[in-house]
Image (cartoon, rainbow, N blue to C red; front, side):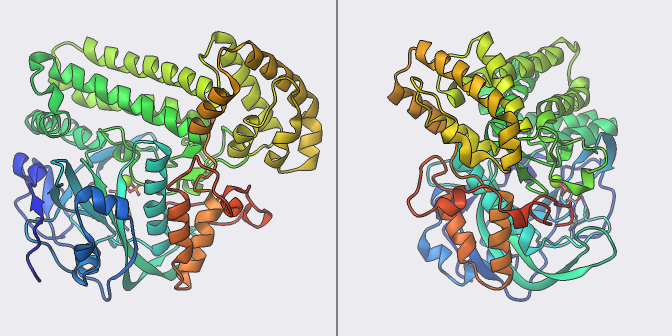
Length: 521
Ligand code: AMP
Ligand code: MG
């Protein structure tokens, strides 16, 4: 293979101790942050989708992305010069319980690419084969879950939500066997590999693992390496740097979950191994998008019993996860006060963001205490009326404050009966909202602009992803390509694309892949 003119500087493995053993033999890895392991080659790598924006970000031109080497590299069959594959070691709290060593069981990082603009991007294959952290599993990913990760990463980015990105989706030509609902009906499915891209994939669990083992030396090395690489502004903060670092993690996490609440995203598996230290949305598994507004909804059938990771509890779960991280980092602190301060920072920033989002979503200059109550009342109506969250907020944009009418909201109702039931409450609320708009300082144009920037038209509705997946499983990738295109401009009404802004069709209500997703992926 031709040597590519790409620059790699693999600091994670350069700065941190590695496992002495190489290769995928499953093992406990102590005293090391990573293990050297090669992707396992696949039968017939084929490029199924590419995010040209991410390719541009990385400085990968068409000469490279169009070449036959590209699917080979990003399917795991070849390396560009400078790539040094590794799997990261980490632990985590899963569903509230300490789970010990987890690690990258099917993700393999290829290297840290230095983009032409000087930015550093870690390239990571998901589904690239077994690693020391695969435990009993195969290290692979199915096409359906890979499409979901590929599309949602890009959709989130364009919504303005911090996230890992996705460069490519490569079909492997190999079958992967999954028992989707863990009910004794395993099935062979097409396999795929996504190349994820982020400044770093370090997780809360990266620090929890050495802390759980009393390995303070490694914990400190990880913290220092993370600050140096991912929080360079703090490198000179001296003795204050751990405190400032933790405060920033808390702040970023608060901003992250506020975004999720704003756009109606449910992560589905907020285990501490799935929490990015950079405050990025990471590990797209059984996530979902709220259709009819319901704070108790979780898309994750694996969590159906405990319902820990419901839409409405995400901020509290994020806080709990930060308390786990604080605990893990505590050996680095003589005094725990800065850790408490960091956690308080989460609460303050989250409350602040919530208010900013209320103002933006309602089209107000500022959010006052009454507006917080007005939002609570509105969300209660959405829930009681089984109204589509995305359509209901966009529907408010059409409201004439001089003559408020429920008409703009009609498209948001899933049932005539529910509409009937909440109609008086909706009408009363609209009067109140209209009066509030009349008293506000923003003019109509400014209001529309604010609202249009905070309330998306297009989100990756579960059933839209499912449609594209079913097409793709028949060999037709056009649905994935179209969705990727539509979701690049989620706040702009796009002519001829009403289908993608529509509410959930009846066929999708209780369908696997739409309202029910398992961790099997
Ligand atoms: P998740 O909840 O999907 O983020 O995964 C939790 C842990 O299981 C992580 O350590 C993953 O790397 C690992 N894992 C999930 N699926 C697989 C798989 N098919 N093969 C190997 N490891 C996996
Ligand atoms: Mg994970």
